[in-house]
Amino acid sequence: EQVMLYTSVAKGIKPPTYNTTDLNDPSIAAVGREKLWTYEVGAKSTLNDGTLLLNGAIYFNDYSDQQVRVQFPNPGAVVPRSGTVNAGEVTVWGAEIDASWLPTDRWLLNLSLAFNDGEYDDLVLAEVQTSGAPLSRSELVKAGNLQGDFSGNTTPGTPELAGSLLGRYTAPLTADLDWYLQSVVTYQDERYADTANLVTLDSYWLVNAQAGIEREQWFV
Image 1 (cartoon, rainbow, N blue to C red):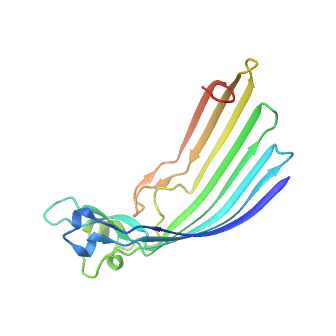
Image 2: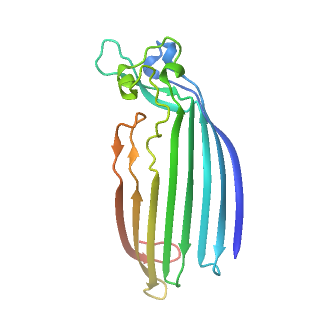
Image 3: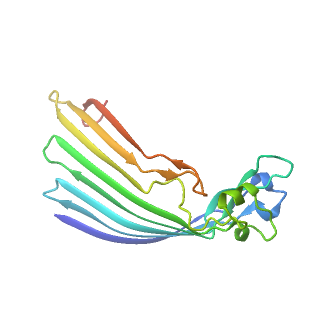
């Protein structure tokens, strides 16, 4: 049996950019760089004479000035302009676990689970845009306040819970070829599609199956 414990701390940045449709308006054209500190602790293990692999991790991501898509006023037009601003603070934490088991020489089972929780700790459009820059009426309506305050909202795009279960059976076909049958069931929890948390994408299940033949260098 082998068990490895690890921890990591890393810093990353996303380069600054510009809202190219607003180069004539310096108050909203420039977008600063996004900064990230990420912390992770986890374990990787090989158990039961190498037939069981068990890995797990807990992570925390601390964003400063995260680049977030919003809408700006568009004078003379009904539809507002889309652009990017720097949110004040965003934090994301989560946990992942992955287990692979070989109960026999012919069977492989794998289970993966992931939990993710992200939140805008500080996203107030009246503060992140240059003083005096106009705020989009649509953003104020979505925020439900005059400051465009989305603080406390969940970050969009990532489900809180996701997982998959894989089963694979392999057996000899000839002296050089094996045949296999594999099925994977995946699940994704519902998630928000927008910063305002007004649009929700439904949770769903997917079931995939495949069969084929394989040898050391190739498979079909």
